[in-house]
Image 1 (cartoon, rainbow, N blue to C red):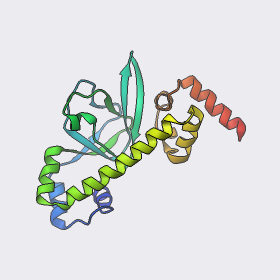
Image 2 (image 1 turned 45 degrees about the horizontal axis):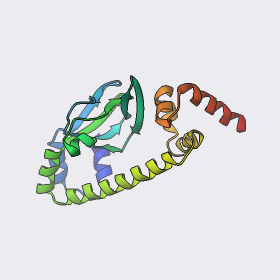
Image 3 (image 1 turned 60 degrees about the horizontal axis):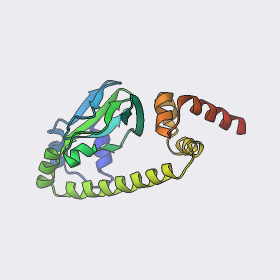
Image 4 (image 1 turned 90 degrees about the vertical axis):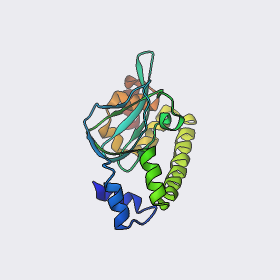
Length: 191
């Protein structure tokens, strides 16, 4: 698993053996079972997640109904808002699949940045990429119909169709599971 992390980091910066050993000394890797809640609404957390293997999702619980807002899979990073604003979380994070995560926190990040300043450069680059991606995803979601959202999902992240339960996928698309079934049937008829 460490090689997956090092390969990802190497897209931004090159690592010396000392830097690799410093990362390994942080004991970042966690195996987490499907269904595990990583964060619940009302909890505070300092943890950020890098998904090495598996799938996690974020969702709100509104009037007893789960409203999925995002799925994170291999080589994606999630820093919950509560980590940044130091307030209780407004949403939940749970594992959709058995997952292997790299779990870090701001103290670890500060330590690494002070020892190895180029990590701060990498974090800034990664943050800028994530911000741009999330903005694009949000704009695309807000300006498209449920059918367009599903077609975009098929085009950009088809693996989610097989990996995520239909009710969670429907919630993510902003529709009911029955509507997703009808939408899929309609798309298949068009082919």
